[in-house]
Each structure stands twice: as C-alpha cells, then as structure tokens.
Length: 268
Image (cartoon, rainbow, N blue to C red):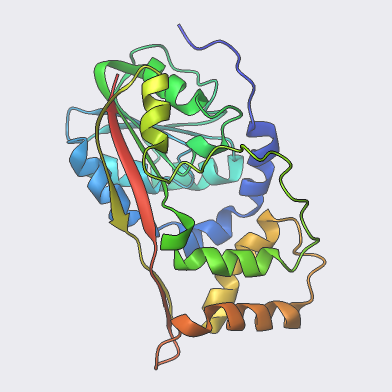
C-alpha cells in the first residue's frame, strides 16, 4: 500500500524549480558528485539494487546509480526537472510528485536516497518516514544535505545575492530547530522515524567557475528562486557578486569555493 496523504510542499516548490531547471542543469547539477560517490559506495549500490532517489532533480544521482547497474526510480516535484531526467535516463521510472506522498508500495526498494530534498518536506520527519516506508525491511535510507553554514563558502555568496531583494522579516520563533546539516540533527530525525543509523560523515564539495561571468550565470538561479530576478538592478547584482566572491578569486580570474555536505546512512 502507498502512504496516507501528508501535507506537501510540492505545489509551492515545484514551479520555481521547474523554472530554473536549465540553469540548475548547466551550473549546479554536478556540485554534489563527490558526496554522491560516497553515498553510493556506502550503500553498496550495484547490479541487483532497486534504487529510488527522492527529489531526484535532473537525474544526476539516478544516472550514477544506473551506471553501477541498479534498477532506478526517481521522483521530483518539478516537472521541468523530471523532463531533463527522463531525457538522460529514458528507461528509468521517473515521476512528478511529492516526496511526502510517493506512489510506490511499501517495501519496494533496497536503497532510498534524498539529496538536499528532505529539508523541503512540509514536516521535518516526512522524508525520513516516507523513505522508511518504501524501503524493504533492512533496506537502506541515505540522506545528504549542505553541512553547517560556517563550513560553506558559497553560503556568503547566496546571502549577498538574496540581500538584494526586500528585507526578510526576522524569524519570530526563538526555538526554531537547527538545520539538517548540523551534527546530530539528521541522526535524531532518522531515529524518530524508526530508522537505525549506521554511519554518518562529511564530504568536501568544491565549486569552481572559470570567471565572474560564469559565476553570475550560476547565481541567476538564486535570483529566480528568490523571486527577485525581475526587480534587481543588474549592475548592483554584479557588484554584489564581485564583492562577496572576491576572496575566492584566483590569479587566473577563476573562482574556487570550499563547501561541505553531510551524509547519513540508516537501515529500515
């Protein structure tokens, strides 16, 4: 049987991610590759693996799993992302839908993954619970997200771009829970969802651009995601990017940003 109908963010998140699918594919799709390799190794994904990626985007992790011989499925709220994933993997079972309410039966997969997706669920536990539901008994659920802010060079750049829009109201909740990427957070959520944590760790995930023009093109993604692309002054945008990225500029005009992703592997 499939899951009950939990609240979902798909209707809210899907259109924005569809609108930026081309930019994601061009500039950001390969960013997580070092972490993807670690997770696939840790989960021993191979020729007999029934594999599902929750929030699969344009299919990068699904493609890597398929190259290892796995039978691949994926789901994403953004139709534009799934269109690109299907072009990349025409034989995979790729669907548009919500990670909180997936169409597969209980106990369907050997390995279930979520890369930078579980934090978008309507409730913090929903991704973990739904991953556990579709994983077979003793199957694996692997989650990977951005690590702590202080370990990510790109975070300051994202903040500078978003600051060009209207000022955001301060979060009124003084007890807002910490982000998923801080040590212990995903471990606690996994345990609360009935999963048994097997291992966890961090992976260095560098990001490089050949020049400032390519960097500005990549950050167009954030302008659109933030809803400010139509109102931001482009010269102000360029100056903000150059200021925020200045310390990461190398002698040849290229840029290198050091970042960390945090991963967790658990058993159903």
